[in-house]
Amino acid sequence: MKVTIIGGGLSGIFAAKTLEERGHETIIIEKGRSAGGRMATRRIGEGRADHGAQFFTVRSAVLQSLTEEWLDNGWVKKWFGDDFPRYIGIDGMNPFIKKIAAPLQIQLNQRAIKILSDDSGVKVLTEKEEHYQSDALILTAPVPQSLVLLQQSPGLLSGQTEELLKALSFKSCFVGLLSLTSTLAIGESGIRSQDLPEGVDKIVANDQKGISETPILSVYMSGDWSDKHFHLKDEKVLEKLILSLPAQITEQIDAAELKRWRYSEANDVVRQPFLRLDQHPVYVAGDSFLTETDASGRTRIESAILSGINVGKAVSKV
Image (cartoon, rainbow, N blue to C red; front, side, top):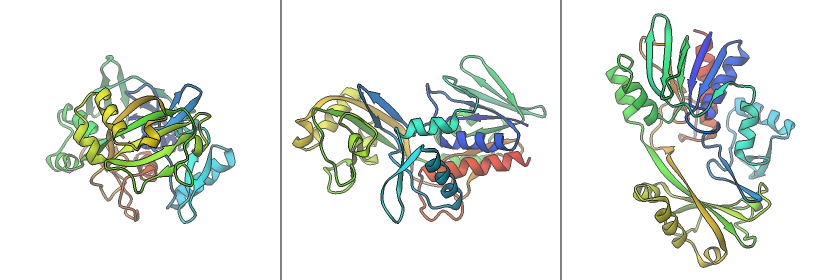
């Protein structure tokens, strides 16, 4: 079987990996310049900074088994924590996920604009006028983006499914990447998420975390703050972000840049790991689709991975 996957984030990568392990052919279509989604790491001078997911935790036996394999490979390490250890990529979160995705076929800089489904299978059309024909399709982009694509593809969505997807909203997030003139300790392990100025969700010191040779802070703003300021240009947002920080940080800023995430964390979740459209071999998956046994009730790296694995297994049985 041949399967097209839209979205090169965690769910897309693990859906492809699961299908390939079962003997199927996959191709991932990713609109960006790099795979990994929110497993994002940026090089800044001689240093690097994670500016998406900062770590992952493990609650399921499936991810525990994978994590032990990654530890043995030297791809990840424990950062801190005992009850639910926080694990990180050795050189950052993106280099780690790229090692997993390396064997997969991924088409970058390709934005899907329409889906056609009939008895011959599913065809995806892109902005660059490329056509991808397959037996099944998995959508793993953030739900609002997948919904727009489905609405642009007549005959795929039932009213009930459309309403379900419409109900899934997301918080946005701004991340300031601040290069400092000298090292600044942030908490005991390089992360602080309490007793912060209004609007600041967490601050991470990438050098203290162990992935950067130079001092770079990743400053995450809250969903409410980010939603309120999302209409502003990057320069203005960065100015407001820096003004919200204490003087001990601002006095040491040598350079600053901004990352904006339009779909950072789902406000709502679906209590099933994926969704199949009525009468079509088209599936929707992602971090907002949780397994029934997920006790956390929120989107995270593990939910994205498990959604991808589960949808991959389901498609392989069709």
